[in-house]
Length: 342
Image 1: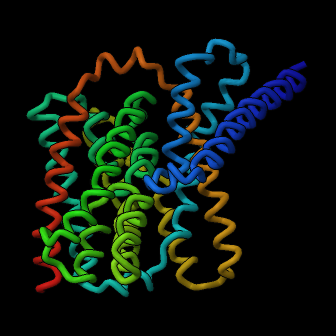
Image 2: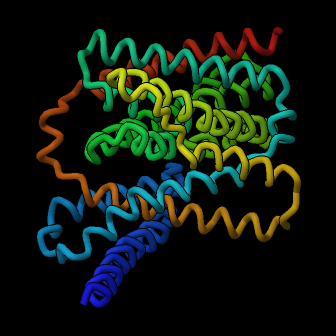
Image 3: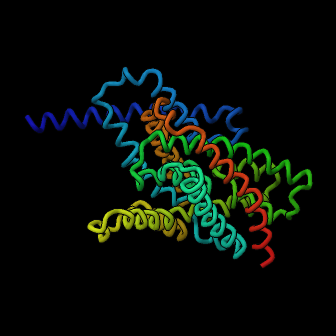
């Protein structure tokens, strides 16, 4: 009887996962529309919007037995997808941008996170989880960073949705603003410097690609490499965050340092990718599947997000993101200038 019950549970969970996959498939197709492609809006963003729309309209019709499938997508599937995100990075690519790219990326990630945490918690009195999620999205790699940070914090899904929303708003604005400022002469950087500036300060990889391609191949190439370097910093960030959060708990728990396995796996996967053991076709296929898995996680996250929960958050995350947006433009510019003159 127990085995039959377990089999039914597995089937229901699988039904929930397939339901999320259906949403992710839709998100991938919608993101291919020229309108969304021109705006640099990735399937991940479309996915969370679809998920939120469903959560606030038809979610009551979802069989409750399928809910474990949604939870599986927001937890286990997410962690695996973040680990395989390392196939987008090689150590050789990092070496290509030199000290300037490494310095810019590391400095911006560290200073943006520290600034965001201080402003969010100390000045805006925003809760710690929302502050960290929002700041991680701005400082590292947008929605992917929010997704990777959420399981470390064990925060509520609507807080991640709020953080992702700020990434969409200000990342999209920056994608159009940067090329405009560069073409009108307000940013006095050469092609290499502009690429480092874009890659070091824009939120999403899609935003970096969109802004970089507008300004030519050299800018785009440097921008993507620097952006991937920021993505690479996601792993040590998660490990440090896990250790810090553990030490903030009571003394009885201090010996239990929670190092996220998927962050370590992320670095390992990047190392494997750097050895060129797999063909470009296989790596491309892996990245395509990984994007689908991340989109599934975003859809599931959206499905767990109800607008009623946003009332308690208010405008503070927007104020925080706006502050970081301004900091990334001006602070990022001067950090880039400093790095290329080193």
